[in-house]
Length: 113
Length: 112
Image (cartoon, rainbow over all chains, first blue to last red; front, side):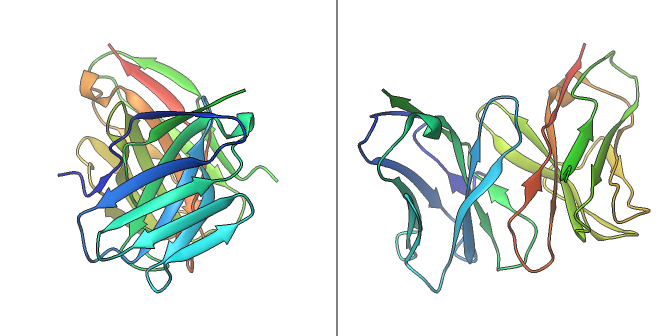
């Protein structure tokens, strides 16, 4: 039973445009959400997070939106750059500080120059 | 600052062999964990530890053992390798007050 789902395995976006990556979850007890970015042959690296008490968190070109009623979160990258080409995983935790992360299956983002 | 170091990077095992994947971190993190990444499955938690001497099972623990004798090290043991354990394994560590995990570079394991 996949509790965190990323339904788009891949996404291609023109350089300079907005990239929107989506993530859905089924467990209403999840309270803290994260996005990780992974390049080939490297481990995932933390990108941005959001607590359920917020509906938006920004960090430079990256913004995460959370819609708790829809159990949906999204990552917006504006403007997209070639270095953003990677696999993006969303992850969820039961609460802030809980180290058991449940990951989605990942979306491969390709930025077209 | 090395962060999280995993060894080896690549390994081929025969069915039934045993081996230990090494993981070390130099950030003095209390929390460490092992994940496996398989195509179409994302990362799944195998075992985790909230401090030296304390370990617990994750989502897919069968066939693996862990121990945590020091804060720095968290080895993962495959007791009797099976082809189903062919995967990429990631070790991660984190502070106790945040779920932001730092990952190692991964170990690609093939069991034939």
